[in-house]
Length: 177
Image 1 (cartoon, rainbow, N blue to C red):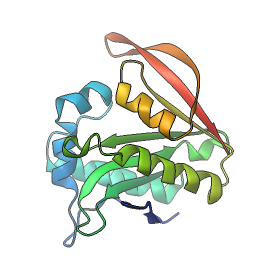
Image 2: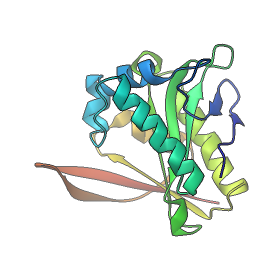
Image 3: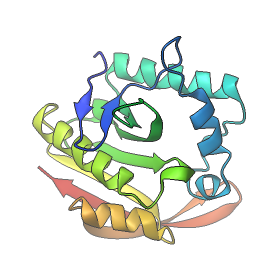
């Protein structure tokens, strides 16, 4: 599948880019070297422009293979990267998708994640025909909890998972189409 752009009201969702017209790599490096992002998104280590390019290429490959739809959340007039939202696990059937999102540190607290996630969920149910979309986050991540609630996800439970050398308590949410 080729990437599809979405009008999300005050933002637009587009593929991550690193080309002559638009280069998301610096903003990705800034986001993933931010201490708060590292606290909540520990599974990606993006330290420099090369790592950011590999991240963008991975997302492009996932689109093409139909396993993940990933969007840069962009400012509509400049195209500046404000965050990312995705639906993954698309190869697991209509009720196996998981949603995730992050916001660039300089744009937190402005509704970027909830606006983008709501648009991605509508796309998942409407265009992709998904019947269920899950969402999970660290139990202590209050901002992620607010995003889930704003987007109409229902809390279904929690779990404790081992991530590296530490145990992490996760909250699990679901939206049903």
